[in-house]
Every structure is written in structure tokens, then in C-alpha cells.
Image (cartoon, rainbow, N blue to C red; front, side):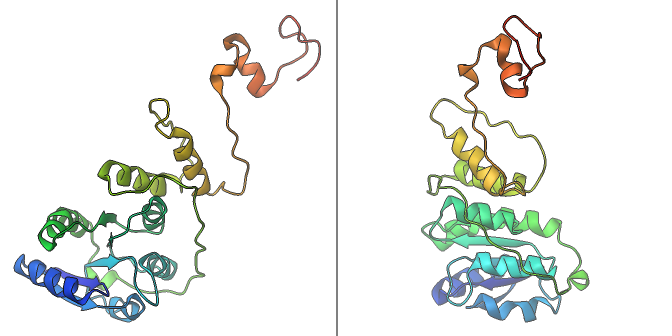
Length: 231
């Protein structure tokens, strides 16, 4: 029977959500503070963590940083009642399995969580392999401003930014004019290992097609008519 650690400072939500999940066959232990959890997780008893973000003492994002820094391998699903793009990006960037916005009722929250929990438990390592090891903490960097909200498609975008920002993959952002492609590109840059380097914006439509490569990469003297010097 999967063991769930539920961390939320809302006692009513913890009680109701625990009852719903136990009715589905899960064993649930509730905590009202994230800073109490590392000792419990170190025992290897738990297969999954459900984590509220806004709590006293230590936020969910800060707790994710602690787990990641110490090498604790357990899937974490972050829950929040106040969604922002940066929260979704930082949750994913710091190791959250997924990120959900709390809907209006416990039943709706269970419907959101249950498929994610099943998926997370499929990839959970056996509990005895969960361990702690001391590692230097990881700094949290603020990202650029994106439009917030509870739109599930946008939450997926924020999650992808958190995942892809850590890689060296070339990323092509598609979208109609005004969709926010530049904001996404800037968020990717800010949440990448290259965040300390310049972000260079280029309006490709402003270049003559035949001279595009020259404008970007330079040219040798005599490469074309008018190229009278190395550029």
C-alpha cells in the first residue's frame, strides 16, 4: 500500500484530503510544516509527497531545494492556491514531479491529483533506496515576469520552462504574434546555466535574406559586392 506524506498547514484540507486518499487505498501521514519533514523522509517510509507551497517557516519551493540539495529521491507534487508562473517554473526546476493549482473542492483536487499520483508512483524507487547526503544548498533565482493564472496549458508551459532551462538543447518557440514568445525565451534564459550571459534579441524580419548570415556571423572582405573589409 503506497505511503503518502501530505504537508499542508490547512488542517481542514489535510483532514478531508487524507480521508479521500485513504478511501482510495493510500496510507496518509499529515504534517502542517515542511521543516518537520526531512527526518520522516529519511526513514524511507514514504513513496510520495504532496506539498503545499505557501506555509509558515519554510515554503514548498524552499523545501524542494532542501530535498534536492541533500539528494533525497522521492517524487513531490506541489499544490498551491495562488499560482504564479515563477512558482511553477521554480517548482519544476527544483525537482517537483508535477504542479497543481488547488481547485474549489476536495473532490476536484483528488481528481487532479489521482492520475499524477499513479504516474509518480510508477517511477518511484523502492523506499530503502531513499537516503540523505550533505550537499551545498542551491540558490533560487527570480525569473522574468510572465502572465499568471490557473490555465492548465500555461501551467504546462511554465513546467516545460523549468525542465528545459537546465538543458543545453536548442529550443524553438512557436506562436502567433503577441503570444509571448519573447517572454518565454527570456524565462528560459533566466532559468538556465547561461543566465549570467547576455540575452540577445534579433528581429529576423529586419534583415535582407541574402545578407542574413553576414549580419549574424560576419563576412570576409570581398565576399559580396560592397564587402570592402572584414566584418
